[in-house]
Each structure stands twice: as structure tokens, then as C-alpha cells.
Image 1 (cartoon, rainbow, N blue to C red):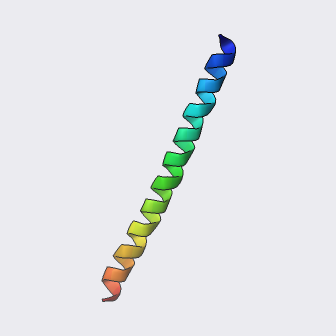
Image 2: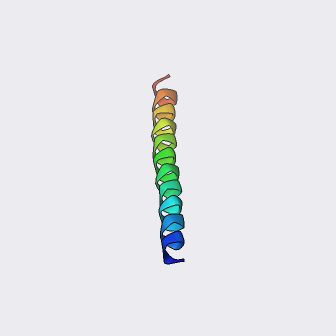
Length: 40
């Protein structure tokens, strides 16, 4: 049982990490977009 929980915990962490990476990328893209708008 503990083994299963550990596995689920890892899967959950993986999801969180992917979401954080995605969010960071989106945030970066948003900042670049804003900078581009100011340049125009």
C-alpha cells in the first residue's frame, strides 16, 4: 500500500513540475509579448 502511495506521489509531483515549467514558459512568452508591444 505504501508503495502505491509513493508511486502516486511521484506522478503528482511530475504533473506539478510540468505545470510549473509550462507556467514559466507562458509567463516568459507573455513578458516578451508585452516588450514587443512597447517597442512598436
